[in-house]
Length: 225
Image (cartoon, rainbow, N blue to C red; front, side, top):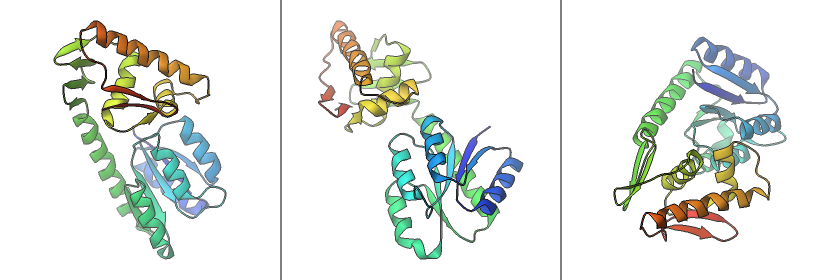
């Protein structure tokens, strides 16, 4: 059962969407307080989010940008006709779609279904990722270099999967820690990540392979290049 979050300061919209999504067999968590909604989502991953743009405390675009640094699930924006510039900003920032108020509830639910289905297809494709002489396969839990399989712990495998999904992009120690351990990142946790990276490099060298592709960007994070 897919879990959908709703954040909108209009209680009537929240109640309507919740009722419709529950009828479609979705698990729903909803918030009229945008700050509480953001706090929940930073601790609890969901499968999709319906997000209003204009809200007090924390606006929808700010929530979108924060969540997109950590998660990649579909986010549909709810917008008023006067917020067209905000919609463009939201789409550039990673929103999957937008719906103008007042909206057709059946259309919104159908759009959500399509985005969830596309995400599932995309994730199936991503089960195996190849970059140059590197390959990671989630279904077999194998990471290989030049077809030589590297024996990684579950944590090490998760770290390499995160980096392989975004090659040539720097992934912060904070993002890696929170994605792998599912806990709030503290400054001391940067050492936890660096120790695992060091262990991965050691295993690569023991295999007789070059580990220079796994780069440290000091003070920022790590990337595969």
